[in-house]
Image (cartoon, rainbow, N blue to C red; front, side, top):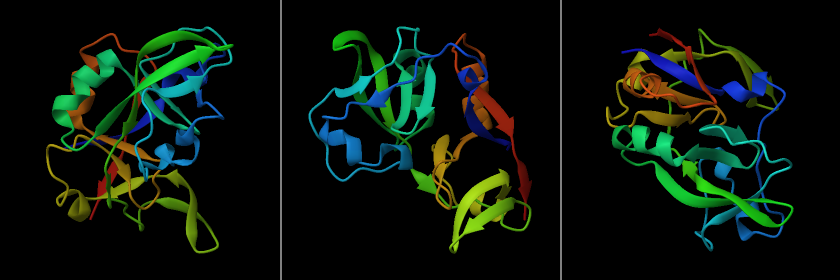
Length: 184
């Protein structure tokens, strides 16, 4: 089976909706971007946007991952333990978009250290220039976990081939798949 890194396609353009969790929200410090949280606060999660550009179906920023209702419908059957929290976007204090979900994917170990190009800082991974996965570690991930955070570097989001194929059958926006090398 092939695996892919999920990337934000709209980052290649100049016009995109860039949401961030409201500075007054208790969700601000929960670490959603790292695929975790300590406590569920009031829902929906309030996001502020700097412009009125229509949001993409897949958005990943400093305050986490947002999926559209349509993208959630495509990947949810393929992602057993993924959690979805309703999100509300505001522009200058007014509600504008409410069809998105803050998303928390599970984390699994899958990094192939030998075949990846890793930049280390103080004994931890700072960034990964070339990402390769370990066949041995992938074999331990349940088949029904189609999308997951890379546990070794949680800002990397990985999807399996079934998710890629399901998404590509749609007209969803903002998401691209980068095929990854798989080694021993």
